[in-house]
Length: 88
Image (cartoon, rainbow, N blue to C red; front, side, top):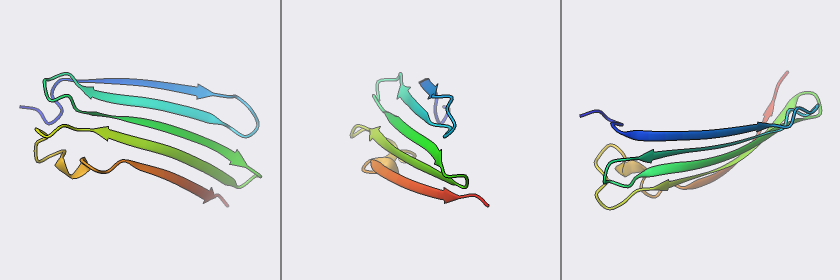
């Protein structure tokens, strides 16, 4: 059996095409087997000034009680993040 046997991935990316390189990414992975597992991820990023990039996002895992040992560490791993990067 494969690690991620029968999954569906959907993704959407919107580029604002502006001077700040703003973009929004939405993606989801869903297990089509009876396990009913997956994740949803929403990301936003943009540049500001000339050397900085700001990123924010949220990741939500939905896993049921029958989750196997591979995905069990992600069971309560929903998270929100903020990140600023300096490019020089």
